[in-house]
Image 1 (cartoon, rainbow, N blue to C red):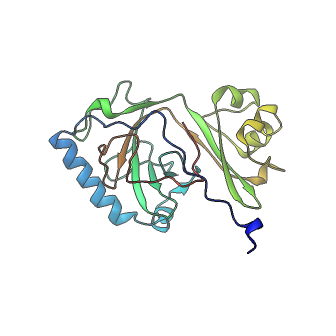
Image 2: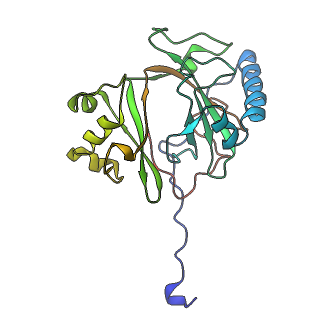
Image 3: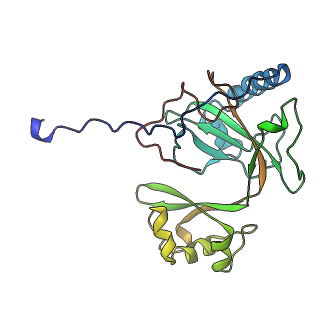
Length: 227
């Protein structure tokens, strides 16, 4: 290839902000919990094919931690063997999981499985995730309760027709994804309820299994900042 048209150097992966910090030290019961779920989930869901067969599907791009999230919408009320979400890296390696407890059934942070209630994150309000079919594959988006209400929809029972109506609004442009040409271009849509969320790394993490970031997981140049 002539030097004048040589490929540009890869763009560095985004730097996490703020700088990643250690999670509080794990108790003995938390160490046992992490070991238990790591051994179990790495055995059952080591590949995305295994996750798909068990009812999980991808619903995000790669985020700033290097994780691509897969969800099972039948498991918002989790137990240690039934996480609500699994995380894979761009190579398809299982790297983490979310366990959930519905806030509707637990007004305060859960005290479960020997894990400190302080580990559980308040993930509210309820909102909606969806995917749009495009020539380059499914692209992902999310929308909150106010916008859903403005198109006559509900975060509790979202439909493809609601997402198509949303695509007609000016604020759709903030998503940076193509508009659907009809409701049939909506690949999936689901309600993400208000939950208490427990995030666990399933690969070694020097910052701790419950930390936000993992220095051992390197995001690719395609990673996007997400909430």
